[in-house]
Amino acid sequence: MHGHSYRLEVAVRGPLRDAGPAQGMVVDFDDIKRVVRERVVDVLDHQTLNDIVDNPTVERVLVWAWERLDGTLEGLDELVLWETQDSCARVCRDDVAGAS
Image (cartoon, rainbow, N blue to C red):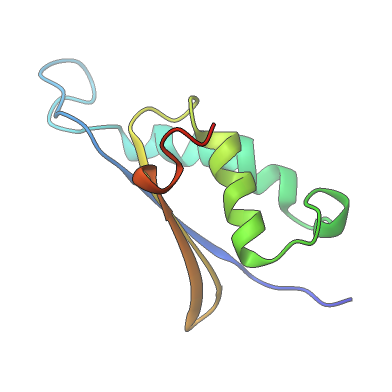
């Protein structure tokens, strides 16, 4: 058993908002951070990944995170999960289109 300090990059895509507190943004960073924390980070942090994701390779954890965020995070377009400083996996909306 060993641990990792993963880093998750989240990208959204969409039109800039014309009005309201998020005017000029696609999605407010605070909203992105809140959703990602609630749906992914708080669920995985200090847990045994094998109890949550079957065979938790970085790719499988990434797909799990996508499934938790898709439909909840407006404009979700891409996730990149870094396992180490130079090793990561990436999934884009085009990769999963029609897969759900």
